[in-house]
Each structure stands twice: as structure tokens, then as C-alpha cells.
Length: 147
Image (cartoon, rainbow, N blue to C red; front, side):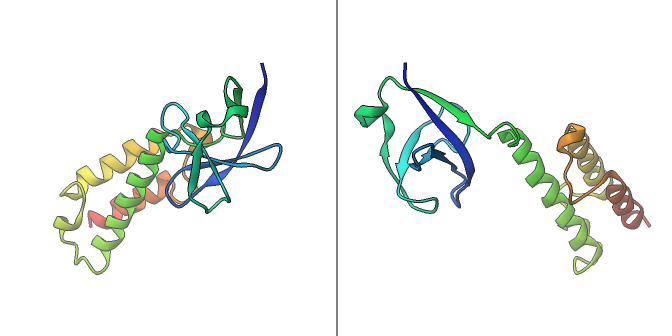
């Protein structure tokens, strides 16, 4: 069986993983990396998806091998990164222009906000902890917000 080797080269502005074949062809996953691949050709990294590969004769009955996606976060991890970032933004606003009003916090109060931030931070394996916030940063938010 023939093999189509696709190397992950990034994610486009619509959250679609983009791959390049050994021949230089560009492919996009219309399922945004969630579940089974739904690959389409594309003219360029930023271009629109064109033809679904199952319509192209040379790609029928071809085994697809994806390379370079091992380090990419899962959809659940992506959500947790985004949520933790949102909670951090809420804390910054609360301490600044939000006037320490708890209505600006996602959780509705300081203690639950901090508990959720710790929970999200601790949900990541050590090798996938966010680089933009540490547990010490969260404890510092807790200290500042409870004074």
C-alpha cells in the first residue's frame, strides 16, 4: 500500500492543522485536529481548502502517516490553556481597572477563581505546563486579591 507522509507545519487562522507532503503539497484538516482527519488540498498555508483528498484518484487507498503532531496539545489541553489565560486576564482586570469588583471574575468570587486556576494549572503534565504563568504567579494573584 502506498503511503502519504504529511508533516505538520502549523495551524492556520481557522484553527485547522496544516500539513506539507514530501512533494511540497499543502493539506488542511477540516476537523481542526479533533477526531478523524478530514483532509483537503490547499494552494498555500493561508489559502482556503480546495478539494477533499478522497475525491482525488491518486490519494484513494493510500495510507496517511502524520509526522510532527506528537508535541501538539490535545483539544482538551488547548481549552485548558485558553481558560487559564482567560482567568488570568480576569485577575489582572480585577486588580486594575476592574476596581476589585468580583463581578468581573469568571468564577464570581476570588476564592473560586483561584481554585479553578490551580486546578487548570495542575491538570497539565510537567512537560506541558504553560510557560506564561507558574503556580507561584497564581499564589501571588491569590495573595494580592485577598488583601
